[in-house]
Image 1 (spheres, one colour):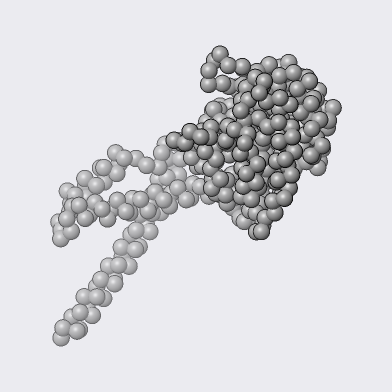
Image 2: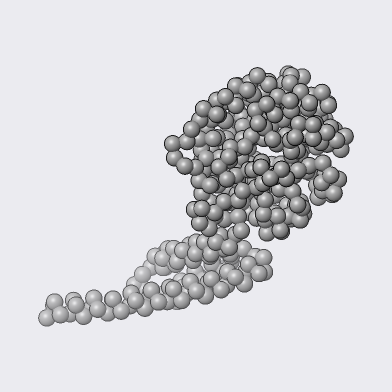
Length: 363
């Protein structure tokens, strides 16, 4: 008798389990529809007031034997699972998200040969800022002997102090363009505001959005309308998710050619300018199909560890490095401590050329 009663009760539990499962999936389907409406409205998936209302309603209607605390704990798990499902569905629609292991954006520059992504380790280099024709010419002459095709030509310098060197502006772009033409190189330069696009388009081959402007959505959307590729630097306190959403602003606005640059994040460490998030590089390569480059100058803020950082950047599967080089760093008008001497640049190139990857990097 006891055995048959046990089986009968267990059978009832099995039926209820299936009913709960059906209701949970039905709830998830409805919640997904709510998420779509919220997305159209531009509101967040998470509504704390709504969650509080639902928990209060459950408490008021709970007749036991579960306590109110138990009921709230169970439903909080249901809420979390539903949120995770909505976020996963939203994430799958993001254009910069990798949809398959072999998906990869390869950016080809106007010569038809120079590429960022696609397996070639690209070096982007030059002084921190354009200071003179002589400085740029001497630097470019050295870089081109090692196959560097992308020259930094920074003329707008967003400095922490308004009294520090702010850059040469358009005259500096003219110098950078002239030097790049002489050596068959391409110019990348930082843009500060959407109003500069028309002027800078006459000079640059690649626009560059600095860390301070990573979340400037108006600038990002404007750069989605240009023909040139865009380098996007990670903000000094940005999560990887925020970084990819910033790239999404550009791509969703019409420009698919975006390069992500990890330039270090701010932590409590004082011996380096920032902390290089090399794990973040590996995650970006898994999560996104966009090329990923590592800025070893701003992440360290010191030239004496440039070589190990460059080596680890290549070993991590990054698509290249960005490094600052100056003919005479101690007299540089900005970031003197992190710019490499020309001989140090050659030493760095020798070092990264010796790095071989045991496993195929994520493309």
